[in-house]
Amino acid sequence: KLQPVTIITHSLLRLSTHAMKFYVTSLAATLLGDLPYKSLGFSPATYFVSPTAIKGWKSNIPTVLYETKDFDGQQSLPNNWETQILSKLSSVIDPDLERDIVSLGFIQNLILDDESRQVSFDVELTTPACPIKEEFKIQCENLINSIEWTNGKADVKMTAPDPSRIGATPGAPFGLSQVKAIIAVSSCKGGVGKSTTAVNLAFSLKKLGAEVGIFDADIYGPSLPTMVAPDNDAVEFVGRQIKTLERDGVKLMSFGYVNDGSAVMRGPMITQLLDQFLSLTYWGPLDYLILDMPPGTGDIQLTLSQKMNITAAVIVTTPQELSFVDVERGIEMFDTVNVPCVAVVENMAYLEMDEEPKFDESLMSNALHHALKEKGFDDITVAEELVDVVKSSLKDSMKQDRNKLRIFGKGHKKRLADQWGIEHTYSIPLMSKIAQNGDSGKPFVMEYPDSEQAAIYTDLAGRVAREVVKVQYANDKNRPTVAYNAEKRVLEISIGSGDENDTDVMPPAELRRSCKCAACVEEFSGRQILKPEDIPDSIEPASMNPTGNYALSVDWSDGHKSLYPYKQIKSLLKSKREATEAANV
Image 1 (cartoon, rainbow, N blue to C red):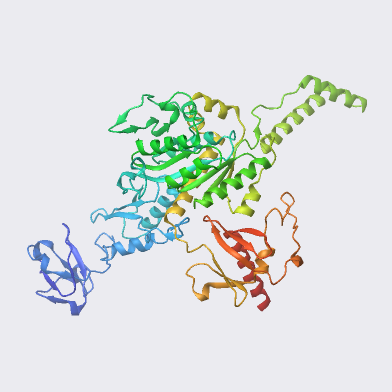
Image 2: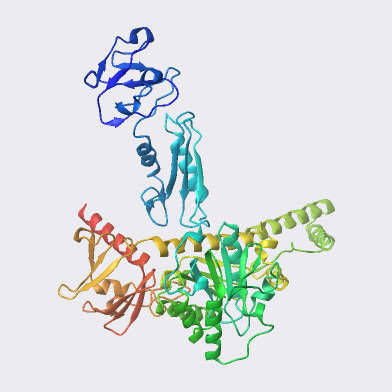
């Protein structure tokens, strides 16, 4: 029978119910008897110990276990198994926060079953609506399954913080105290499909797994009662607060639900009424509250922006030039109250024709036959085959172009990206089905969840969720910091830590000459209007201020005002470095 081993080291032994082996150096063990290691095929430095032989004094036995093999060839567990797992998972990077999921604290409830070698853990993301959570899960599973001493069947669960666990938001009305993020959907002009966008965005976020509510803040002309019929339209009270209505798990509130028709009252009364709504409506735990803003940029909009602590804004417009002017006004309004605009929706961007082309095949066949006959080729069969070729060609052409008729123009996506740094723009077609669902009380994304148009709303919801995470959790380490050194007459631009080694310099004139506003660059052709030689080298910034989270506003000494997306500034620095490196080669 086997004798016990006294092991001298620093950590306590973790016993299991099966026989264990220890890799022990000669300095770390004192044998109380000879072990039959030779007959078992072990090397002199490896010993086998029966758990029953040390029962009752296991707490007094520390161990220095290292990796070895069981009798069946299975690799034994290392002491630092948790460290190895976390080290593997640290290679998974959150693309929005630009940090690994371990340092972000996403890994929760890490468990290893000693018997089955099953590794299980939760990945607690910042939002349940994360559109790339399945990618995270697959990466984590593959990394853990690659570890030799696991059973290759990692159990990874994707979770998100329960909104009910968050504390009260400072300064927020009581009914909004458990709302994690408020997303304003604004148009600055009526009739562009703002409410349609707000409703379909909300239900798309719900489809992604989030807890969502919609607040119709348009007291003059509430749209929500028409667009979304609640499961139960009876207004109830919980204590002294109004209970929200619901439709398929999405919470709803509108002045139109509690009062028939729109309000006829002056501005100050509307503001007071909204204050009461904010104070009396209890939303409970929510990941996102979609705020359907009234059109315009006046007192009501500013009051809502300030009192509701809005997290981010989505601007809705149409492709016309007149609507683009309103987009600029909306961005400037939200910038005034420090609310970043994270996406722009071009509604009614094009007319999508559902029907296939119709033509008289007989008439076309006769015309082709007549033309062939004049050329001395009298064969009706060839004419009929040519008709089939033409018909097939027309169908293929329509599939490629989707038969999109841009009745309001081509839109302003590039202009938004160049001038304002807003890259997330979405084009929603003008469709009778979307309009019909808006009047029927059932959102389009619920009626046609698998349609291409619903996929656009889903993409919008996913992008909004990711941008909100950046606003709430990401630090500013990747945002350029620009300062003017008047003594050296250069712009000092740093990205990251702000150390001198990470700081680049640029002459102010170089940045001024790269302005892409409408006065400096022709919108449609992209032709440079500004002549570089017209900008003196002595120009300097009179003031510089960040615009939201996406751009830098500069007032120049020549009276011109420029807006530089941070992406453009980074691109200028990159080009400058590449030119310097090429010159040094």
